[in-house]
Amino acid sequence: MVTTLDTRPRHPEKANRPDTPIQRKPDWIRVKAPTSAGYAETKAIVRAHGLATVCEEAGCPNIGECWTKKHATMMIMGDTCTRACAFCNVKTGLPGALDPAEPVNVAEAVAKLGLEHVVITSVDRDDLPDGGAQHFAQVIGAIRARTPATTIEILTPDFLRKPGALEVVVAARPDVFNHNLETVPGLYLKIRPGARYFHSLRLLQRVKELDPTLFTKSGIMVGLGEAREEVLQLMDDLRSADVDFLTIGQYLQPTRKHAEVKSFVTPDEFKSYERMASAKGFLLVAASPLTRSSYHAGEDFAKLRAARLQALGR
Ligand code: SF4
Image (tube, rainbow, N blue to C red):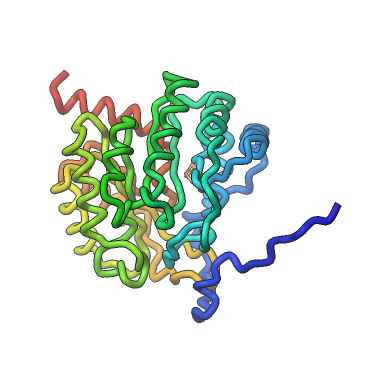
């Protein structure tokens, strides 16, 4: 049998960017290499179902901890993205056709992992007429059918120029609708060039308008060169869009061709962001160097529910 290796560059669009050396991480960002039995078991289930995870594709530093607890974030609609964000390690290119068996496969993996709460994300699929909205809805439906008690969190693309797509996803009734702003508006052209800040903000606001019972969530990375005032303004913007949950984590540079880390934000500065965001009225805030949008998502969902009930005086 002949094995053909895929030698295409992972980030062809970044090939001509200057090399930026990767800085040494400060002590507060060190993580252990994954070695646990739970990690190996999660990996085996993910492989057996031919699934892609953002944990691996994005090179997430929390993979040892999360997979030990069987918490893997599935990345649907392939492993190739139609956007080329300067911070992201997911492969860029023209993706293949959608896999019609994927919804059932994901649902089966969720059942095998025994997940009470699952996070489903995807690559951007600007090539599809609906941006993959119907496929998202099918995955939610398949999980509901297979493990009805599992709560479902989705982390979606922005469905830019895909009229009607958001409505399809919201109608499938995930428990948490997450869409990351990623960074402050002033850095969009450099960091998230294919997206539009106000479109993403409006998307989150629209989710709440369509179904006020859904929890909404958004996240940003810091350390990309943003000013503190810009982060505080972004918090106000998200509160205006009635977003419930904000996550803030440190940006880490995946390769020499990605955007450079401008600063390592200290744990104290993260605490300060957390205090400011809580004071602005978010139901929940997670801010720490290793916070990622899906980090501790199950525990945080329980906290979100409790916070809403408290806010309603129940
Ligand atoms: S934080 Fe999210 S992306 Fe990272 S390993 Fe955990 S589940 Fe995966």
